[in-house]
Image 1 (cartoon, helix red, strand yellow):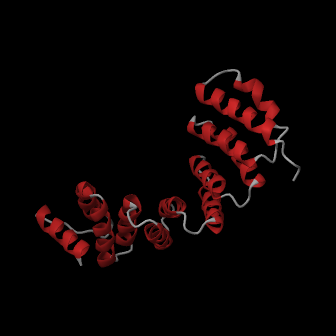
Image 2 (image 1 turned 180 degrees about the vertical axis):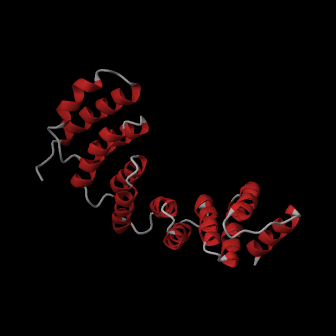
Length: 209
């Protein structure tokens, strides 16, 4: 890796990101100059991020791969690359990338959650539930991870564990009760409460247990 002239690279990448975010045609003229700094990971991550937000996914993929190549131990770069791969429909590559990101930071709740979503989308419910559980362990108030953990467990027919996960989601966000009730009804292995109050009481009891 060559030594980086950060004082020159940083403002150049910043101007490029600002131009891309604003939809300024001047960004096209700035992009070739970035090639002088192939190893400036933070800059390529910022460029990839703004391109991904603009749904310019193929261009984002190039930038984010450069970010990871420049900083292979950057959890942020690997996570964002995984999200780009998901957006491009490359689920298996995304899963491998999220797993790499977790070797950089095993306590990254957002990355565990992204891994869980990718696995769940591929119908790998047991692995997805493990990923969601790790996300909740890293951040106990992570509502979406707890909710999806309940769904993944329910898909495996593990209803008692699913109810515990739903109770965790309910504790962190009581207003999500309707989503929990809907998940319980619509899952492959589901249950129907004729009285919503009864389900609410069950979740509340598990929260306080």
